[in-house]
Length: 311
Image 1 (cartoon, helix red, strand yellow):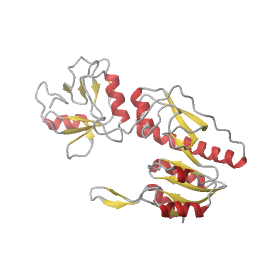
Image 2 (cartoon, rainbow, N blue to C red):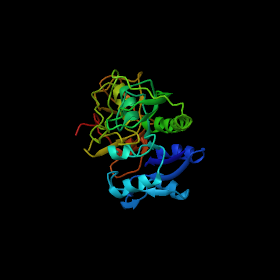
Image 3 (tube, one colour):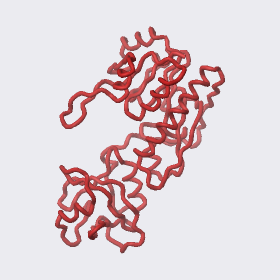
Image 4 (cartoon, rainbow, N blue to C red):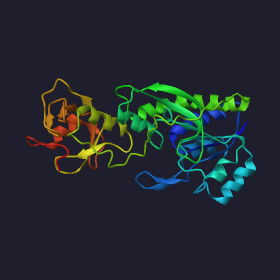
């Protein structure tokens, strides 16, 4: 089957690799335009573009899929199907109608749960025990199309969004390829999504990543893991500066502390929450690289009663 692959970030690479190694012919790749990155903010190609160029594929990078030149080229390619993994732009109806079998999206949730841009982050934030991936045909609605297949994945107690998404990117790639094979063989049977159990997963902002120490320890732990690596959990240091946080550990046997109150020992740093304290892992004070919390505390010269998030 002739296919166009659409994707942008590294999480899409396992699916692209699976397609390149399959019986299907990847005739071109659609990805977002080069974007500023790094300290110098120089333009860099997406991970998918880099891999596509290395494979000698034609790469399409329109500012918008509504671009007439892009739509004309897509029509010329005459692809039968267009698999999509985290492309990053909405596809207009005129584009959706061009491939014979439409656009096949790999979405990292068990639809109709967690429709939207950040399904893995919201699954971790909500404390879900199981998540997964779904393949579905894209419609004009937000992740509403009929589902071809699913795969499930257990959410482990220490999973960050990054670790969970990495696992899903590989199991999801196998699902995407199996779905494409079924479509090509004429045995695919998509199922209309239920109207029950619908939930939404908008992109998490920097404001969403602010840790509120008055919340229960379990909620603090989930928020930090959900926001790792992006957008990155944070609080304010005792001096009021921005203070980034890596995953924490629940400290159920520790003495109670007030919300945000710091108890620094030789080898561990505890912070109070609305329930039990948590033990900090890596932290990154403003302008510094990540370091062990105990190393930060030794150099911070904390006053008695110092708190995070107090400023």
